[in-house]
Length: 90
Image (cartoon, rainbow, N blue to C red; front, side, top):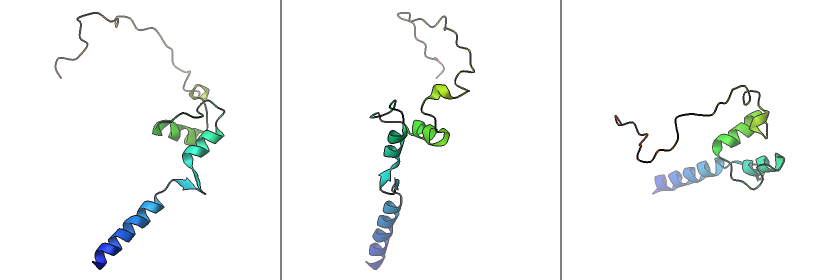
């Protein structure tokens, strides 16, 4: 019984220590308050949160790698009724 109490207390302490609050303010609120309004009120994915935390840019288009590619329209991928694009091997 004593081991069960110690185990439950240690689990509670672990759960409380894993909280993402920084001085009572969650990281989600910090991100939304620092942005220029583009992401306000929107739920961000984990990858977008990492992008904003690590690079500090509010727009992906401000990144130099965002515009270093040439974009061309795709040809031959139109929708054709009755044609399946699945790989039959899988």
